[in-house]
Amino acid sequence: MTLMTSHVLIVGGTKGIGRASVAAALAAGARVTATGRSAESLRALPDGAEGVALDFTDPVSVTALGSRVGPVDHLVLSASHAPAWGGFAEVSEEALRAAFEAKFWGYWRVIRAVAPKLSATGSVTLVTGAAARAALPGTSGLAAVNGALEAMAKVLAAELAPRRFNTVSPGMTATEAYDGLPDAARDGMFAAAAAKLPAGRIGAADDIAAAIVMAMANPFLTGATLDVDGGAHLAR
Ligand SMILES: NC(=O)c1ccc[n+]([C@@H]2O[C@H](COP(=O)([O-])OP(=O)(O)OC[C@H]3O[C@@H](n4cnc5c(N)ncnc54)[C@H](OP(=O)(O)O)[C@@H]3O)[C@@H](O)[C@H]2O)c1
Image (tube, rainbow, N blue to C red; front, side):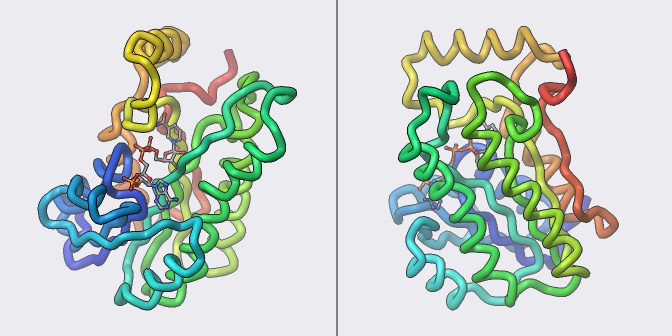
């Protein structure tokens, strides 16, 4: 796949799936601009990417990104914090509202700010999550946030055509998102998840990045959701 001569903007490029996507887009020949929340986190960007600070919970920060960035061919959204894990009775309204703020509203703000800069042949790839459709107990909050984004993306694929909108839906993927857990708890959770998957392992950030590059590069792909989850979405 080639992204030669394309300008790619990756939101959340400093860690995990976003960082792997920055590296994959650079390898595919793109010019890459990528965001992290601070000057310090931007130091983690792969060599060759231009860094821009962005906190998408802050409308002023998003407006500044929209003003600063030039024409964009492909926008990738791969960021979140404060996911609302837990049973329906346990996740508070406050926690679920925070989860929407930390992903749904951030993606929404960035798409609104950057859409006017998107080339007619361009694309937007939203990283969502297998919880949106897997109906796993304890993930109703994750399902709500990611399902809302998947539903919105399909409408935007029709409304903002010919610009293409796709979602890439990872299953559990080993990234810095789990760094806050004690090592033993994290390793146990990864092993338990892997044992239930047809693929027999959890995801690596590079697995998801490969699908993100494909979604950007394939000019006939729009309104699609790519399940890159080792089979987590399949009925068990
Ligand atoms: N890992 C999984 O198991 C998994 C599974 C399903 C879906 N996903 C989804 O995949 C996407 C990427 O996840 P990941 O595991 O790669 O996450 P990660 O390793 O924690 O990286 C998150 C990225 O988002 C940025 N970010 C966080 N809050 C932000 C904000 N308020 N404004 C702008 N940027 C912000 C971070 O910037 P800083 O470096 O400045 O912190 C970082 O670049 C997320 O949407 C996540 O929900 C992940």
